[in-house]
Image 1 (cartoon, helix red, strand yellow):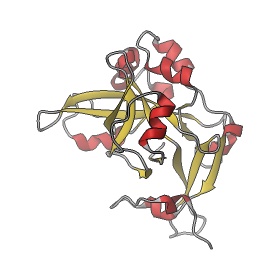
Image 2 (cartoon, rainbow, N blue to C red):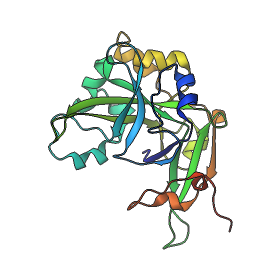
Image 3 (cartoon, one colour):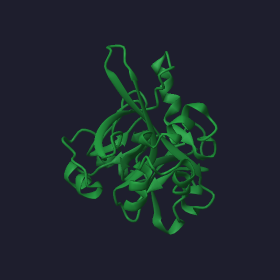
Image 4 (cartoon, rainbow, N blue to C red):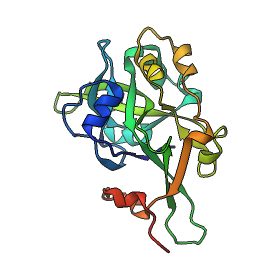
Amino acid sequence: MCGRYTNTAGPEEIAKQFNVNVPSDSGTHRFNVAPTQEVLAIAAPAGTPEATMMRWGLIPPWMKDQRGAYKMINARLETVTTKRTFSTLMVDGTHRALQVADGWYEWLKAERPGQPRQPFHFQVDGGVIFAFASLWTQTKAEDAEWLKSITLLTCDSSANTVARAVHDRMPVILTDADAQHAWLDASVKTEEALALCVALPSERVSVKPANPAVNGVRGVTEGPELLIAPAG
């Protein structure tokens, strides 16, 4: 499961990386992106990739209680084509998306009882901007406005010893521009899109202890200090 991540870059860097217009700093300069928040994503519903804000946690049209979106922040790669909620989005290439990030958090259970879990922050290639392979949909919100929501794919981390040391799952990450374009291309069929979804090699992933302040659930703490474990 991937339940928190970072997107610390600014809109100019992201625009250059993905060759899209990022009209504001919404969703950028983030050190603790949490479920149900609005996140920066790139989708191509009309064929041309564009940056947009989406709520993290998929809200299918049939979901009556939107609080259930918290349970749909991730989609397992192994079942994404068999679970009806996700399979329809995989088949329709216009509902594949890129969730912009530059790191993610996972936790280890504390060795001593009563102590908080230890968060770890993962980066790719020393801290480059990348994208989670994601799926998105939209539904009418209570105010009759269209609400876009998103879920990111996760895979077994067995092939990546760095990620596996902390958690048995890791996000599906697309770093190559060609792979990112293919993921958004509606002409790319499900099987071809799934072929893009592999665990990154261990040598491309690094990890460091993070500040336990990132654990907060009642209020999401922000700031670069979250990336640094306190001394002692």
